[in-house]
Amino acid sequence: MEAALAAGAHLINDVSALRHDPRSLEFAAMSGKPVVLMHAPGEGDDLHADGDYTNVAFDVFDWLAAARDRAIAGGIDRGNVILDPGLGFGKSLADNLALLNALPLFHALGQPLLLGASRKRMIGALSHEAPAHKRLGGSLALAVAGMNAGFQLLRVHDVFETVQARNVWRGMRDAALTDFSGLGE
Image (cartoon, rainbow, N blue to C red; front, side, top):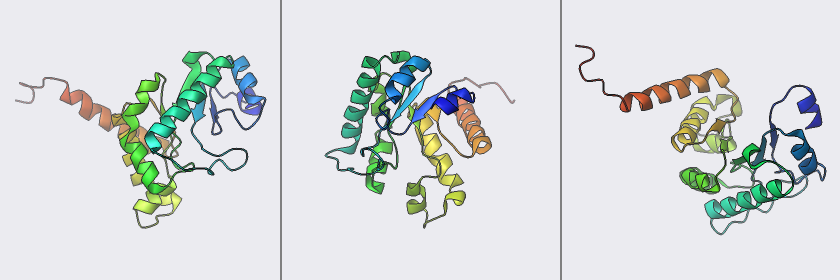
């Protein structure tokens, strides 16, 4: 985190939700930068461990609420907290699909939301084991699902293609809200 901010980063994106390094919460609070807290069920070096859920959407929701509250109690301004449901981290394909179908639920946490679905393993599982570099179509489909669910931020690999998909998605959405009667005659 220190090196990234020193190099000019404007945001801290921590896959451990500030749990891995005991200094991270204090450092993130002192930085004054926005902080992404991502759900990952494991501790220490294996963030994929302990992915045993009663109901994945509710369990991740509760976990993120606790992470948000811990961050705020640790001195991070609530306006700087961004939450990420952590697709792929300690989750089966069924868990990931359930989370994707429950994305709108996470708005109830009252924070900006980030979806990191680009090139995820689940895309390979749903597309005859396509390798990571051939998962653009699936990455775009999941980005659009996140945008449809109102997620404000996307973590992507293929920036140009995702921005193009966003612009087309936005154009279609905005056109649906505009009265174009009488145009094009």
